Structures are given as C-alpha cells and as structure tokens.
Length: 171
Image (cartoon, rainbow, N blue to C red; front, side):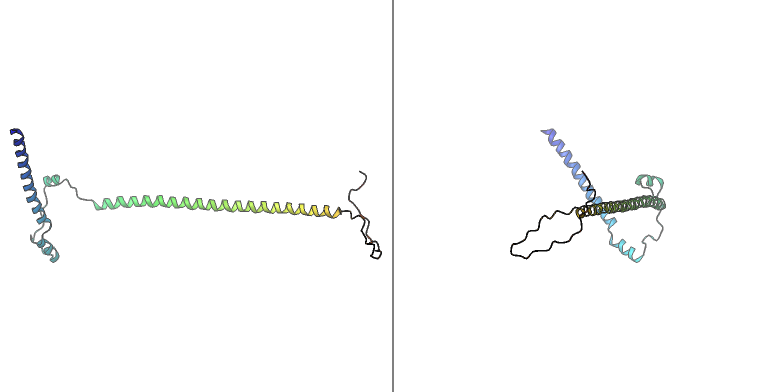
C-alpha cells in the first residue's frame, strides 16, 4: 500500500503544479490579448513605445514556424484558378447550347417528317374515298318493281336512261 500512496502523492503533486502554472499563463495571455489600455491607444493612434518594433532574429522565426504570406502569389494563384473555372464553365455552356440547338433541329425535322407523312396519308385516304364513291355511283342497287296501292291512281312509269355498267360484258 505504500507504493500506491507514493504514486498517488506524486501524481497529485504534478497535477497541482500543472494547474497552477496553467492558471498563471492563462491570466498573462488574457492580459496581453485583452488590454483596455492598448485598445484605447489603438483608437487614439498613440503608440506607447514610440519606436518601431524590432525585427526578430532567425531563431525566433524558426521557433514560430511561420512564413510571411506572399499575397501577390496567392492572388495570382486564385486568379489562374478562376480563369480555369471560367473557361470550364464557358465550354460547358457552349456544349449545352450546342446540344440544345441540335435537339431543336431534330424536333423540327421530326415535325416536318410527321407533317409529310400525314399529308401523304390524307391524300391516300382521299383517293380511296373518291374511288369508293365512283364505284358506288356506277353500281346502283336494283330497285325492283314499285309497289302500288290498289286505291291509288295508275302511275306513269318513270323515264330513265338506260343503265350502263362499266365492264359489264359477257362473263
């Protein structure tokens, strides 16, 4: 049991030290980032140091592991990406318009073919109807004897032209 209490005391001691140092550092960081005095100086344009900030040496730059941003290079990169996107979208739009034109032309062609087909069909139907009418006109149905009533006066026979049947020769 002595070993477990030793480890617990050591761990608790380390946690206590870590908590105290973290509390001190956080208070210092808050003081650095949020200082009402600095905000007031910034609003008035007054610099408390009245001197230019010193340049950091190479070791400090390496320690921070930051490199200065090259804004011109970034702008150029984004400009080129925008140009590529613009060209891609332009090509896509051209393809959509071209495809749309082709579809319109194809629809017009189909409508024209359908119209021609309907005209041809109607012409053929008209010819068939005329042929039927001619055949029906040439082939009148025989009427037979006209029935008369015994109470009616005698009717005069109707005068008709002689029937002519086309191709009604000997069969």
